[in-house]
Amino acid sequence: MNTPLLIGDALRRNAYKYPLKVALRDSAREVTYRELNERVNRLANSLLDRGIRKGDAVALLVGNRIEHLEIVFALAKIGALAIPLDVKWRSLEIGSTLSSLEPAALFVEQSCLQEWALARKQKRLDSIKVIPVGDESYNAMVESENAEEPQAEVGEEHVEILLGGQLDGLAAAAGRRHLGPLGRQQQREDVADVPRVLDEEHSRPAQVLPALHRPD
Image (tube, rainbow, N blue to C red; front, side, top):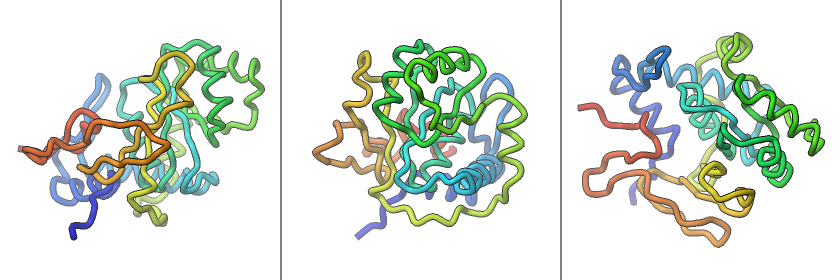
């Protein structure tokens, strides 16, 4: 029986096998697999220090940038539920979704701070821990921690991503898409069907996790 390959395991493996290979690139910078895995570990350890634990929900109002995947990988390594939200959402959509899901924390980039502030006031979301992304405080939070693998026991049942931005209207709280062991599709009564993370024919990652590609 094959041991399932979890999201965090895949990143750690690629960091070991291809440490100097470029893993991610955006308009501002690029990072290797080693650098990415180290930053993810630092962020994961920082989240543990902030009280985020396995099974907690954490929302993201973060656009298409390297930090987005850093956060998703870090949450996967500690078994927390990632909830990416659409950065184009207005306060009504943000507030209604977060009040239904009640996440423990919210990562929010600078461009979304105004709408988030309105949503927090409208829906009284003061209990949500806010972690800004895109300023020096985020980098300071990451760099202040050690780069060792986080001490969290994560199994195949703990890796979930709720894709709020891909659901219609304010129904984001109603559907879950489960990304369990890479290459296996989870069937559960409370989750919707989701495309497989790996292309089975070629055993290559598909669109969901671009940082997990197998370098040529």
